[in-house]
Every structure is written in C-alpha cells, then in structure tokens.
Image 1 (tube, rainbow, N blue to C red):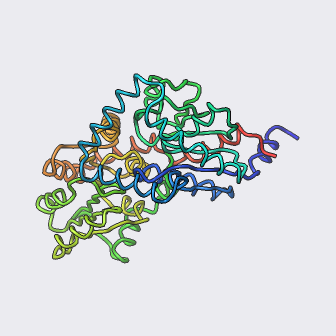
Image 2 (cartoon, one colour):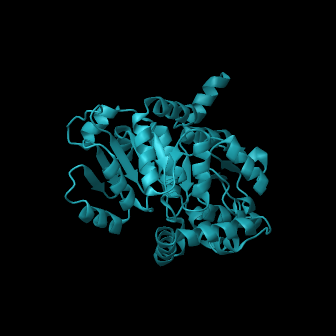
Length: 391
C-alpha cells in the first residue's frame, strides 16, 4: 500500500481521549470543551470529567468557589498570590501546588484503569502536576499533552513533565523554555476554540439573530459588546454608563455577564428603563455576538481574547486581573490585536474611536486573522495520531 493510503487508513481509526480540567477559571474548561467538540465531530470518544471531582464534589465546588470569589472580589489579592507564585516557581523544583496535586495520584490512576486512552489532554496546570507525579512514580501513562490557555508561562508549568506542551506562539514558547520546559516538547499551535468562532455568518445575519430578525443601520449607530469573561469580573456597570453617555443615540450596548448572577441582576435593575442596553447572563451565542459587534470590551482572559480574535472582532481590553491577564493584554496590544485604556471613561472613549476608525478596525482584524486560524484542535488531533500506536 502506498504511503499516503496508509496514512489515510490510520487517520480513520478512532481515538479514546481523556481531557482533564477544573472550574478555576472558565478559560481552561472552554479550551477543553473546544477540544471535545472537535474530536467528537471527527468520531472520536472523549471523556471530560471535572478533575477535582475525583476527590469529591465538595472539594471541587469549594476550590472553584474560592478561586472565583477571589477573582471577583479581591483581584489585587489574586495578583499578589500570582506574583509570589511566580517568584517561588523560579527557586523550587517541587512547589506546594505540586504536592497538593500529587495527592490526586490514586484517584486518577483508578480513572485510567477503567478505560484505555490514547492520550490525555490537560488545559490546566493542576492535572499536569498530578500526571507528573505519577510519571515520577513509574506509573505508565498514555501520551500526555498540556495546553496553555494564556499568553505567558504561568507559575509552576516549569515543574511539570508532560510529553508535549501546546503553546499560543513561538514567542510564548520562549517563556516556557526559560521556565525549564525542553524546547523539543513545545508546539506553537495556538489555543483551541470552539468551531463556531471561525465560522463566518456575516455581521448582518448575526444582528438578525440577536434582534429577532430586525436589521441595524451601521451608518446611524454602532453595536458595543461588553463582556466580563466567564465570571463577569470588572467594573462593568461604570463602563456601560460611560458608553451610554458618550455614544450615539442610535447605539446599542450588549452586556454579557457570564455566570455572575449578581451582576446580571444588578445591571438589569440599573438599566431597566434603557431600551438600547440589553443584559444577558450565560450564553452559548458569543460567536454570534462577536460578529454582530463593532467593538468588544473584554477583560484579557486568554480564551476570550483568542475567541474574539478568531472571530475577527475588534476589541478593547479592560480591567486585567493582575498576573496572566496583564501578560495577555500586553501580548495582544504589542501585536495590534487589541487596544486598551485605564479607567471606564478612557476605555469607552477608546472603544468609540475604534468603532468609527474603519482603517484601524480593518488593520486589527487583518492582524488577528493572520495568526488566529481556528485550527489548533485539528493540529492536536494530528499530533496524537503521529505519536500513538492505534490497533
């Protein structure tokens, strides 16, 4: 059989994949879901349990709740902890994070005994630490692939030992090398996103889907999308007020609060009388919202930023949580994928200027599309096929 025919036959074999993440930040789970969506669309079998739930639902909920509340209520505390972790990670080979997650060895071993997986994908540091501990104990593992979901090497990646690390770009890969990850393990494939972000339906069709079939005249007004990320973090209320005050009378402001129910209720009460302000909670229609919007205002989470750039949505980065989000924002601004400003007033003004500056918008979208192809999941699938034996 010719070589090409062998490759085609091989690629028709179905894979068994385990994806491990947890609820400390929506981006990790979103990357995992993007991988699950793509792999299942190709006919593969995918398990995607909550990694922390192996230790019990109470443990999973407690850890996730502490993380979310810290980010929402005390971002400076989170930033301080991140900074300490970054300093510690440069001076120790095994951190408290490693030892905490090594306690999950037995739970994960039992999981692996139930199903023979071809590969384990980990878009989160915690399960990567557990897999590293298991490997050091001589436990046989399938192919392990870590997936970075930020545009920087977060603290403690350097103490893990996965077979490969999918990173957003070669530039970010340099940070992983500095952290101690061997260069041959790094693959600059990008961050996986749902297939919907790379599927173009057109801005007019997107508007119709949001406004119940109605059209929108771009000449008379603009559509601004405000998103706080999966947790609805940031001073969203003040930004919306500034946009309303400085924007045109025919503008629309769409606000997505994510899973932050309190913020959703607060904004609905606050802007109840405003016909041009629409408040949403959790939605699966973010790709549609992004294609409808003239400008997106979003905190610089790695996943949200990647999704927006993949959708070709001009964006203003707002209110980064100190740490990896600051690095994400700097990366995007440096490459012309977004702009930013400090304070709600300046952010609103920057977004309005961007909405009306057609040249800048087109330049930003062109730069986004040059890097963000939406094919990361496909590349990871090809990697798995090239590295595992399929019977």
